[in-house]
Length: 382
Image (cartoon, rainbow, N blue to C red; front, side):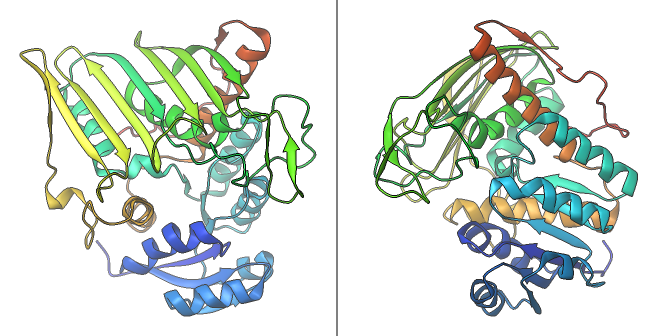
């Protein structure tokens, strides 16, 4: 590793930046927090003081002209991810964006192409790829410990919006409250879709069922209870190009704690279950079984599997984002293979779009929807 530090500029000074993104950069000695930008200057200044950020901006375009900012982190509301990311790419900056990159996969593929042409690195904020337990499962897949992969299941167990008085966020601008609005499949589903694709390879076909279970709720930005047909639960079956089968469940109302992600992988030589649910003060658990020892046993990962300075008692946003930040900074400074790029974000959104289409049309939908879209460089799955 070189002694160089990467100059980082963060756009967005809200709660997720404070709890996940900024602690990750602050803790990594190869990252230099050069700038933070927010439309509310007081928010930006508070984060600058807390994390030792050098400069404060209220206009992201001004921040993009800062020569010390080499990489931009887009940590803002969903509808702004694409335009802000494109501005960063066109300014020649490497860019990390929160998910989803775009509502339509075609737009996400377009952004991935622009980044390739500009020669800048990208990363999607798929937080859970950077769970130590998930990365151990990925290692077991790669080294053959699990054998041929038969089934991959991704489940979301997070009852964040079960209470109709808890304000619903991120409703798309101009949405028709009288028609079903894809929501949990976008917010939570994109993570699961990425994780199961990382394990089993590209999707071949999907079929999904979406539903609104709580028809009246408080929506942030609106007064009083709203009748809104927001999709708060989806289940889907998937078939992979590899021949493996999969199952997905995304939900705002399935009883469980944050972050509520469970990944189950079943292969010819073994099976693994990673449960990313904060319970009893522990951020995650990992269990493993084999055909000769079918009772699942807990796996204790070594300290080296965790980001320096963390334990499984570290709050999960900081735990996972410290890992994500380390990987992206090292990819840029050391020229190591790219992982979890805008292309991966586009492939996830493509599957989201296909599941929505399958629900509307009540049929299986074949993938890819955009067969012409392939990365210029071979994607690493390591």
